[in-house]
Length: 91
Image (cartoon, rainbow, N blue to C red; front, side, top):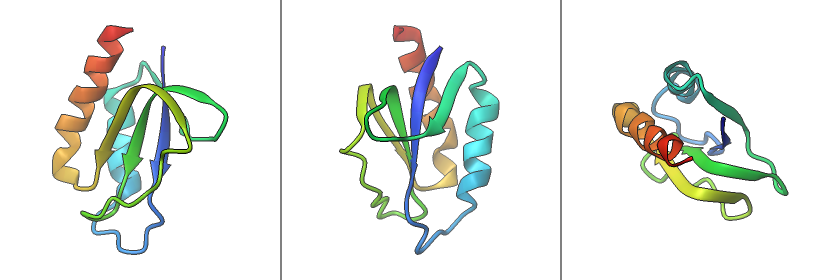
């Protein structure tokens, strides 16, 4: 099972329901173990959820193997799911 660390921005200027979009991602990828990212834990990938186009949440302090996918617009939901699915197939 793929392990994905989730990093939210600080929420100073959210332009959409970040939690709602994350729930949609979780619903689509039920074979992924999502957890709020913690330092010192190794993840297969990171999901950075920004509230606006700045998508300024830092993530370089986390350890990950495949890569980082950022979402800052609910219209990018399909692309985000597709990218995570591609990484799942590599495992």
